[in-house]
Length: 586
Image (tube, rainbow, N blue to C red; front, side):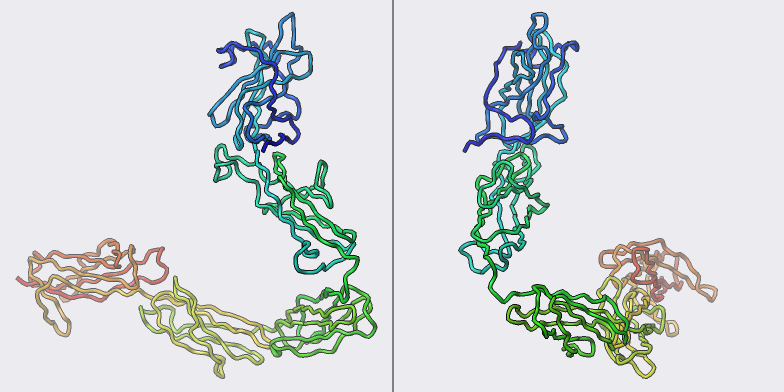
């Protein structure tokens, strides 16, 4: 369907042509030579002229036109018998096409120049103008850029909480003269045909800009507007007279396209609502209060006046009364106000629930307010019987709780390095305030002792961290026998073999470092022969070292491996493995 082309504040792109004057083909192609003395045309205010970084938006008919017409001004169109021509060069920014157009100078302020450049929805175009005297061109105007958007936004969706649309279930909750809010929403501005992603070359859309609305007539020129937020929504609050009304709403994009058909929301505004009315109940209470100190909670019921002698019922819930306990009723003033006083004896959250039971013109309503009542602080600590442990060793963890009122329970949690926090135990502390538990460590572990609080003492937590060594498991390979020297087991190697010490580190330390140390026994003592540099542990957290035994017949040796943690491993401490003994024979 063809549509009239619109623009916001600048000249429309037209299908109509202008008087064409032929130019030399070569000159049109490159717009040379340039005569700086020739006057440069002017671009009227409001023309389709934006910058390359911020092109102007224009609508476009469907199907798109085969050309464009722009308006330029050529001062003194005829000088000394020479008639100037307005020349326009236009191009598609994607580089796919370009075209030129010109028109003879006329004794008017501005002249229209038609350029036979086919236009396409979603594309960006640029153009500039020059003056041509038959032999040379003026310096061109600064380039103008514009984008085309020919797709109208979809019909908006209209909702209202107070007046259900005609033909739907429900009844109005407000009457004539009461303010109500209509909400508008839209799925946005459609992309040009064939486009799947906004902003890609030749796939531009101007975007939903605002909603236009009118009551009981379709919105026309000068219709009221509502801005659109980032989610494609807007709203308007009005108070209406009684009767049947229809709200018409259209969406408009930045290029000036409007929804092809408006949303029509038809509803009825009653003269008055049938009784009883549902009032609102607002409570005002302090956020915090001191235990055993008086506090006040005030309230306001809407839809006054209220009959004399009415009261509101009050129920308070706290740690000692989770199901609630009744407080004295509070008298209700005719204007709907009331006040409650209380002296809370239990700390923590004190929730006051107020209920108005209703009367002949008001429905039942209730509301709640919570006051955090202060509680005293108590000491909580957690300790271990050692700062660090061997891999898999058992730590004794002792949690301590100070003075409390009626709660003597602690919870102890453990969180190994890299793992999740888990409950170890929950229990009542002994007469000294202690709760002891054991825990097997395989890596650095943080222990937490938590007191949930009681009626008069606030919750508290404490933390303690214990370290764990890694475990280094070792074995020799390549030997052909075994023997004992005293109580020590020695592996026996042939002098032509190589002793190999295999080491595995637990937990998994793949990519970390292990080094090996070799000692030889002579002169009644062990002497270090070598300590290797870092050997990177394999993906199975294993490594090995070998020792040549060619010149070591009758000698005694021992080897061991050390896991050396780096800054990347904060879960375990460095650890030496046990000595592995061997001797060499001919």
